Length: 302
Ligand code: TA6
Image (tube, rainbow, N blue to C red; front, side, top):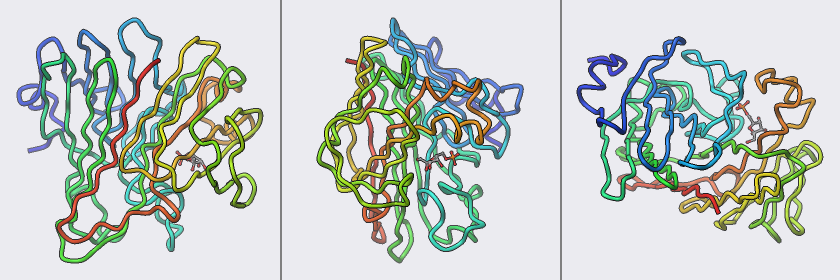
């Protein structure tokens, strides 16, 4: 049975007053959550959180006004899932950057109204969505999203095969900010990073991160929380991760954003910053046969 039948999804997984499924004009199927604590929209394609807005707060997650919703196309903004590799594929440049998981259909396998008033929905990557030429391993992959005053996203990789496999991954999260010159990012002081803008040179972070040009840094061997202090919005966004040893901080700045063409206006890049919870470079994850790995992140406002 096709999971993309909205009627079937609502019969099986809708929660009155909290969760319903709709089909967007683009043909993408969306899970729409609205409970007493927050609202969120999640595309079944890529199990891709597109929005998260706690009641009484401005949106936490940024989605480009020019995001092109189309089957098979990555969505600019939200929480893209990069899996089973991060960035360019190690050996085959014809394979999609950041893996295939974010542009293929996922299925809904569970929905729950939790006692604390939050709503949980579980997505699974069906074998039929996995291109065996790119990923010839037996696995079970789930993305568990919980929407309440806080949002948690847990990407779970189970090795159901007979041999170890290695994954790179990320919750490549775009955050809505007042303006890029109003923020500083803390939590990575003293960490080593690979500077993509500087030919991947290895450097060390000194002090808080501020942004006044393109920034694209892969911080390694860090499991620290990060805080986006936004003086313009008089709030901080906390990113608290488990099962991730890398963090990427990215803002494309004006030229790169213009080249990408889906950041909206020519100043669209000023309203966003990515702080991504990652396992990449020396932090890629070896998943032994029969083992399960979890990348878990909680997003909250302070
Ligand atoms: O995580 C930062 C990054 O790797 C940047 O180098 C840039 O490529 C960004 O991801 C967006 O990639 P995408 O494939 O979504 O356009």
